[in-house]
Amino acid sequence: MLNRIQETADYLKGKVHTLPEIAIILGTGLGKLGEEIAERQEFAYKDIPNFPVSTVAGHNGKLIFGKLGGKNVMAMQGRFHYYEGYSMQEVTFPIRVMRELGVETLFVSNASGGTNPDYKVGDLMIITDHINYFPEHPLRGQNFTYGPRFLDMHEAYDKELIRRADAIAAEKGIEVRHGVYIGTQGPTYETPSEYKLFHLFGADAVGMSTVPEVIVARHCGIRVFGISVITDLGVEGKIVEVSHDEVQKAADSVQPRMTVLMRELIAGL
Image 1 (cartoon, helix red, strand yellow):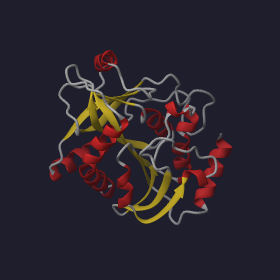
Image 2: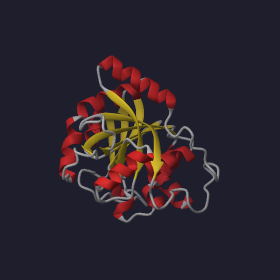
Image 3: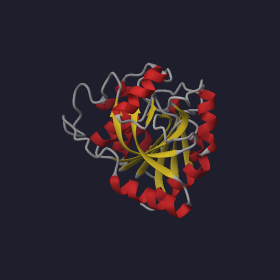
Image 4: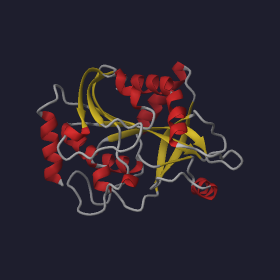
């Protein structure tokens, strides 16, 4: 695995004009933030050695390098999911490549179902903590020397970045919520009873990604800021049939707010 990580990183180092300090994972319906990146270089996943290929509609499947908010960034336009049949090492492979490229800060976004009865479709939720409900842990197996065997996770999401995001949101008039995200295997959306259970666990939103990537990022010493777009509601009396297309449409509707918040947060680093 380490040899493949290094091979991929070396390939990109030989192609990229400027190595990134910041990485962004663009979730469902949020890929257009990548259009904000200037001086861009694009690499299709299929052309990058050892890279998996995204199979989900709305995930374009390319790495973008360039500048956003005056900073050197790389963005994943399309991520990999456990439900696609990938192992956790494959799902999180790009994070370890980021570490080899020198990334110090990761911004991750996703679409999620709200389990908090106070939430509404279109809300932006800054992730303050998460619950790992995946059947396989991303650090299972041989421990890489990037981090300790037993990783402390008391601050998975960087408090200083959360504070800065709150200040930007207040200045720009963007309403944000704070909450706990629970990551599940997927690909089914939750039953009403599962939504209820996850809320009892302490989760405010549920989705099928993010948690593995954040765990591996922290193991690599990369600090993390995470945000969820509430695209449907898992609240008793508000649950309706939902499709992937509807999730994408709901996520697309909040792109202007998301773009402003992420751009300003990155620019202020």
